[in-house]
Amino acid sequence: MKVTTTVSNNFLSWNRQDQNLLSWIRATLSEHILSYVVGLRTSRDVWNAIEYCFASLSRAHTIKLKRQLQNLHKGNLTITYYLLKHKTIVDELCAVGHFVNESDQVTHILDGLPEEYDPVVMNVAAANLGNPLSVAYVHGLLLNMEMRIARRRSSSSSPSEQTTSALFTPKVGNANHFGRGGGHSSSQGHGNGGRGSRSLRKTNNYTGHSYS
Image (tube, one colour):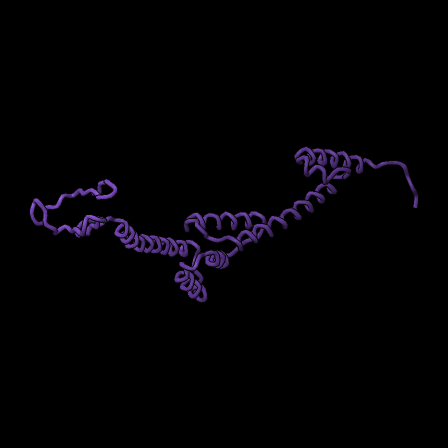
């Protein structure tokens, strides 16, 4: 094999184009990503390093989003806001190349609901066995259930409020008064004003305090 020191014009032209492309790629990289391509001399090597870096980040981000979707619960959120958070995670998964079909979305939504929504959960789960329901349809069912739960809580709180009010309302009327040393007295006793005309104020014989 004959070794030559002459560089072909084709290689020089290719190398010039490759270095220009390499400069353009580096100019678009952030300082963080640029640290991954230091020392690489061709645009192909830089591109492969960037692809590997972002693929690793994408896998980690996908795993994180999947966990968020699985651990998402309604808690104290409204149904609308709960489903909005669910949709945000689903959209982010779609952006990184992981599509979540509608049937799985419904399953995740139902799994995050509290027990008071069990009637809807059971009906939707049974319907999904035959003809899977859409997220929009399930959203409507959950909104109706949310309103029913709110009305139930409102009606159940009213009797307790009335009972509490009755317990703390002072009773005025046939209360008997006993004064030490003053004898037994009642609202039906006899006095200067006749039957039932006893004064509303009386003085304790020992303390001198007035009572109403």
